[in-house]
Length: 405
Image (cartoon, rainbow, N blue to C red; front, side, top):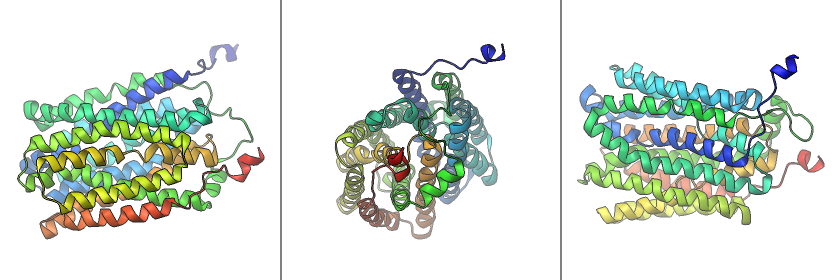
């Protein structure tokens, strides 16, 4: 009798998971990609420095990373849909509190810590766990590419919307409206409710066993190192590029266009990376992406800055922007399997967010100290070369436990 009343929901279709997951990532990532446009109006009205705003967003990225493994564990154990609902509610609350915070500490706690935790429960790691358990192994890279492309589409769509909202409703009114939009994550989460999160083929593996296995595996360590660099580069550029262009006399329309182009080309880049990951070694693909990023940044900062050069850079860096996401997560799934994919993806993403913290914070810190972003640009180039080399020796073959099974 009780079993009849607690019957599990029907098995999910790949199409349903992709659609609902993509819409969730579109909303969650689309909102966060525009935070750089709040820097100028917030610090002007509050009388803060760039470092104050940058530190809050740095805390956001670090909180996202720290909470990511916990959100992944909860999603793997109790169901991703529950974590997604909590993430959507916290996201909306964080945006409202960000609008009303008048002190650097409360701004850091709301725009930083609370929104960061909300993002850990409403973005890639949680969605990829469901996809990894729903999509067959031979199509995972493609499916991850679709989800990552959805986040890119969110950036492309939301960037002009957010700048329009700020100009017409003010920066606080824009945040209130986005808080309402974040609540859409809640009903969408029901679309990825899994029948079971414990029925996996092969022997059950505890959380402790999974962590010891992963962190003792050198390829996992190298993937984390590469993802650290990814976070440093993209968040520094995403937050500080509008101010960098303004400092060089280029108007808001140029920075808006640049971030839109990043989002647009990121759609093609992430989807292409997912497809290429089905045909070529993913580790070589990752090395190529990091190396090309370093070259693109070097050309950008050493050539005359014009609207055309900005748009060209945005298109190139956009194609490479989140193209690391599908192959990185696909390699993790390929090595360790899908049982603890959300958790392990969360730990890899933690390294990404440590890099994000340093990228966005150092951008503001060194700008206030030197009056220039040059040091951080060159540091991004050096780290890109390091990540290119680090991914070359990564082994993508399944770990011995899976081969035996």
